[in-house]
Amino acid sequence: MAALASVVAGAIAAVAGFGIGSILTPLFSLTLGTRLAVAAVSVPHLAATALRFLMLRKALDWRVLREFGLASAAGGLIGALLHSRSADPALRTIFGCLLLLAAGSELLGLAQRARLSRGGALLAGAVSGGFGGLVGNQGGIRSAAMLGLPLRRDAFVATATATGLIVDAVRMPVYFLTTGGAILGAWRMVLAATIGAIVGTLIGRRLLAHIPERLFRRLVALLLIGLGLYMLATRSPAERSLNPGTPTPASASR
Image 1 (spheres, rainbow, N blue to C red):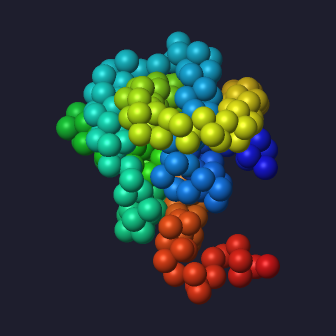
Image 2: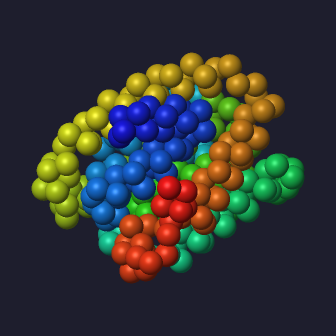
């Protein structure tokens, strides 16, 4: 299950710049718990993100990376230090609403008319990086923020990917210092997810090359809507343990 989900996640991330943490963290949390899941998913995330960067590095926008990416790294470090609070339901609600707002702005054409200033890019980078360290879903909100930047298809994915690598570089040492032994204890799941994410990345890179520029940003917006609705409609395992009598969408369908 983890391997198959990782292939899908890797393919989506290669197209939209996010997806691995968003898809795998909830899946891992069913077995490992939310806090450990955030840390364990950072391993396949790093492997697939590094591969994606190698394939797209020539399209990287260095100016956006210096402003948006470094702010994202700072936010990622702070979020990683606080990631034990990742089960807070308010965070999921805020996260989902932000994704829907950004996606709606893009589909309505508002994002095209209201590009982020330098200060706005710094703030968006810090917020997206903070969520990355905190809840393991930095890719979605990072791509949402980057819809406000004037980037073409390959530059968008390459810059989002490079930013993800910076965030991984600052958050992973924190994760391994605090939960390294537990991550090693889940090595089979982590290895399967890593291999799957790499395979998915190779598939997704081929798909990206066939997506027209005029449709790319709309596709990213639609994927963000899907992620936002998912975040609003579901609860983390920690929340379910506090309210065991309330069915989740999955249990209600059985």
